[in-house]
Image (cartoon, rainbow, N blue to C red; front, side, top):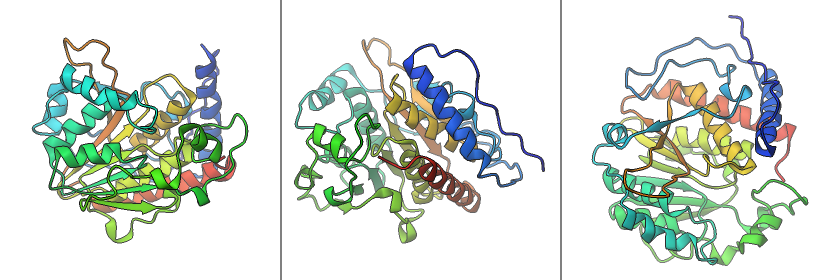
Amino acid sequence: MSVEITTPTNRTPEDPIDHFRIELAKQVHEAAGRAIHQNQQTQFSSDPCTKEVKAIEVLPFVTDARGTILPASTEKISACIPGYAEPTASEIQSYSRYSDAAENYGTAPGPATAFIANVAKAMSPSNAFCFGTGRGRLESVIAEQSPESLITTIDIPDELVTAGAPGAPDGNNARYRSKLGVRNETIGELVKDSNKVIQLLGDSFELNPGQMSNQFQLIVIDANHQLPSVLNDAANALLLADTERGAVIIFDDCRKSSSLNTSVEGAVGIISQATGLCALTPCPPPNVEGFSADIGFFVIPPGIDRAALSERAERCKALARTFKDLQPLV
């Protein structure tokens, strides 16, 4: 089968962030050219949230990072996640107070936290997994909304972070962590006494799901935001996802105009193209001013082809390592 790799756009950048998108697209294009594997097109399911699976070589992100995440109404989300209710203004305001406090580094903004809380409440997952622990705020919110859930979370300890070059993108480095006040003793401190939260310390890039595979119904990705790491975390999320009951994989920080979030959106686009799953984002609820949930998510339908999903996840992990080799994490 002949494979064509989409050529990066040559249009004039609209702004500095757009320039970053195009430059990153070219890097992805070059990496994809080194990672070609032929693949038959298949169909995962007739679920309305899936589309025809395409070969991983044909990546939409090498053309543009924008337009890879489709807006979804509350009715659409409720059809995918039975029992989901859109966040109210008071819920958003309640969760927003956490992100305003300097000591709550790494906390998702109010709209995103409210969305995750309502998804957890609707799903009541037996097992949830969080890439990126911070102080444990999201873990505590999930535990509050779904008391029966067992939550596993991973964050990188001080001894594994790099120094961080001046001007390096935000990620797992000492320069960025120092800016946020991250240190070993504060990781997961809000849930350290909970018997419902399992804390893992380590580099998620080296995570091997192993026996944890196919166990989790809710997965949140909010860790290192550099493209290789986000893509690798997302690929691991596909392996962790429960394909019998179905699962929801949520990405924070992927809809704002910043170089950091463009990397997240790029990873979402690659996963979408590799698996055939549609990435969605919640539409602003009516009568809620200022709502902007910086969220993208996938719904893994129950009964999806486990072997096919795992095979594509492993391809994405290999692609993430290719990106890391081209541009090491800093």
